Length: 193
Image (cartoon, rainbow, N blue to C red; front, side, top):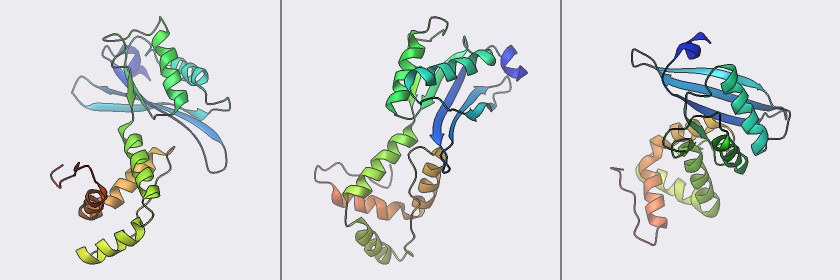
């Protein structure tokens, strides 16, 4: 991709590893930047099988080699990944690599995926709240909405978080009520937030 060879700005990456439903492991790296016309550009720069263990060192090697192949090593701004321990370790390895030119020390390098954090919180709440289905059905009746099964996501599939949020938006008021009714500390959500 010639655009990265001549690009003189900073590049952000998103990265994920996962195992498919037929137990094949993959890795994907996407580069994001803003071009001279102020348009967001994104390119998949790595999508391949990852047979080796998904540990911090191997992930660091994958990210580094991908950056090296596309002349991005000295152009990195940030890398966004989920909260897996191996990803945190990979970022520690990358931050120590002397060939990586970091901005503001390393404070901007590791960006934790907010969709993944939100997903974990929602899934935990749904699992803890045993009566959530019953309450949800009652609230649907109360609001005059047809009860729908909201897609639960798989923590390792980023598009499933989108599906969860897409399905849940129609039930925003109901989910807000359910959350607020479960709180005992006064930390309530309003429909303005």
